[in-house]
Length: 147
Ligand SMILES: [Zn+2]
Image 1 (cartoon, rainbow, N blue to C red):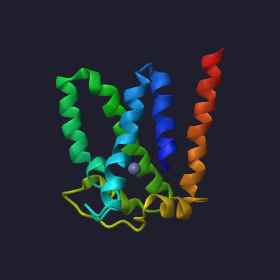
Image 2: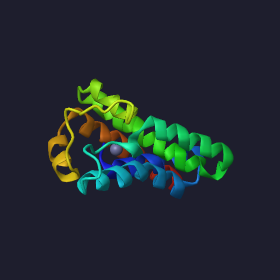
Image 3: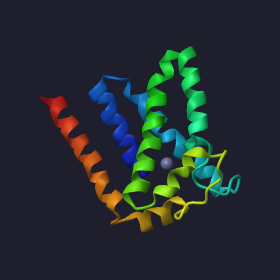
Image 4: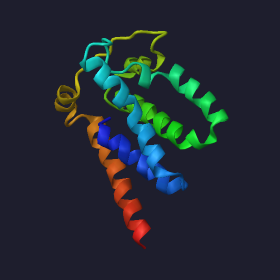
């Protein structure tokens, strides 16, 4: 899923569930802000690693037990992983959700590209069209908030 759509999804979740929006959006941004630069500078070979790992998400969940204020951040982070997995399934690449198992499983996905190249191959795929649903929910929430 595209980075801005992750942020929009977190915003919508925050508005609908009455959660603090800034940490939710920060949590939704977190996986890509960690993993994409790490891959672009060559620290790791894949564009979805630590920030997209369920193992690290579970550690984050344990931290939420100690610091409840981090719960919205964690929910935003979890929403990012869920939407990325959904996008791979929608685009006919269900095996690629193994990215969630990093580092236990180092799966090389069918599509592993830097952000701009990813965007260009992603245009007009089924998941690309599904993103309009998220943006439509944003419009709904913004209109509902004005009433
Ligand atoms: Zn991602």
